[in-house]
Every structure is written in structure tokens, then in C-alpha cells.
Image (cartoon, rainbow, N blue to C red; front, side):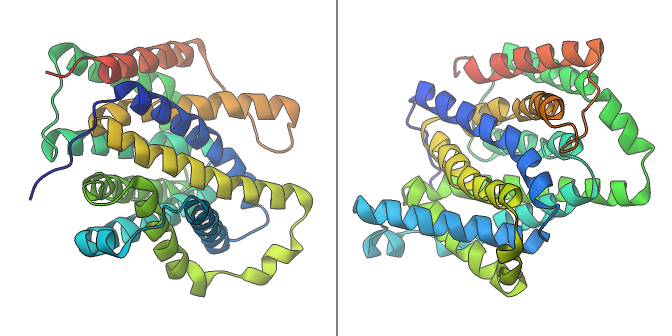
Length: 307
């Protein structure tokens, strides 16, 4: 089986990856607020359904809906794998988020970017130079420093917190499998068409579990957060899927490693503006040093030349 090759337009891939980082970085905060009023299944169902409808309308207006010839030539087995594992990722991450905190969730979900990077190296035969492996080491050290307190909390946490953390870690593995399947599917379908099918499939999977009536009881704040989460899903995953078309999976994964820093900064800003909405995270000087190392390591991996 031939493997997907990136277009080589790395600047576009980088820009799309950074957009994904920003949107995924602020998403856990919006989801935490939304879960105050809705159950996990209904939130997931609404995000997928809204993304499917909006993307279908957009592609329909532009005359870019998937054609029958394209659908015949694509691998439905890979599409099923991508759909099931993305749905699993959403469920496991949301369950874990409900049992832990936005910062902890964003830390542990970064296992997904590590696994995606390894998948790019092993499956798609991508390569790092020596200084990029040094970048991996710097990034890892930065995470250990940046999230030292969160990791300490995890070790000493109660059983519910640990269960939530395990759920997020499993969700990270599911996401990496989805992302690698997504990249391979780009051989036969445009990224938007792939996401349309995946959104529709995931919406169907969660329809029996959704409590639709609860949507009509939401106040303005929680309804606004839910709608934001839906648009975040549509735009962020669209940008991520397209970034894989133009850049290597191992490079994209390195940029996505910056998402937790966006989360922590966002939490600090939100806690200052509305202290009752999200409790602040404590960031020490060591944590700030860790953030600098994460950025430096990510830049070394992502911007290095290919061998």
C-alpha cells in the first residue's frame, strides 16, 4: 500500500497547525463550562452534528461535496477506523475532563501528539535530524518542568481524579490512531470531505445517547459556550486535517505540543476576568522556564529541514 506524501508547503502547514493549537488550547475551558449544564454525550453529539451540518452547507454551496467516484476509490475500512477512534477520543477526553481539570486534561492529552509524531516516523517513514532529536529532549524536559505541579497532583490524587486521567490517556491513544488514518485517507479524498464523513458518522454514533431536550433549558452563557465548542470543532479539525496535507505528521505533532501552554495562559486570563468561572492554575518560575523550553523544543522539531 502506497503512503500519503505531504505537498511540501510547510509554511501553510505551520500556519494551520498554529491555528489548531490556539483553538484546542482554549477548548478545555469552554468544555468545562459547558459540562456544568449538560452531560458528556449531549455535548459530543451536538458538536459533531453542528460541524457536519455547517460543513455540508459550506461544501454544497461551493460545489465541493464528495463525488461518487471519490467515495468508491477511498478505503471505507480506514474511514470507519478514523470515525470510531475519533468518537472514542471525544468520549474518553470529555469523561476525563469532567473528573479532573482543564490543565490536567490538556497535559495528558499531549500523549496524542507524541504518538502521532512516532507514527509519522515509523509508518510514514519521516525522519528527524540530530538537532531535532535534541529538540524532542528539550521539549520533554520543558514539559516535566512546566507540569511538575500537575504531575505531583496526579500522583497524590484521589481515585476519581486518577480514573479521569486514565480516561484522557486512553483518549490520546485513540486520537493518534484517528490522525494517522486521516493522513492516509488524504490520498483519495480532500480533507474537508473526510471530515464531513467522519462528523456524520460520529453524530450517528452518539444520537441514541444524546438528551436533546436538555438543550432547550440552557441559559445564555452555557448555550454560547456550546455553540463555540461546535465551531471550534469544525474549524480546528478542518485546519488540522489540512495541515497533514501540506506537512509531515511528526512536524505537525511538534507544533500541537504547544496547546497546553495556550490552555494555561487562557485559564489565567479567564480566572482574572471571572474568578468564579474557572479556578486559576499556579504557575511558578520553574513552570515559566518549562514553557520556554517547550516552545524552543517544538520550534527545533517543527522548523528543521528534512533529511
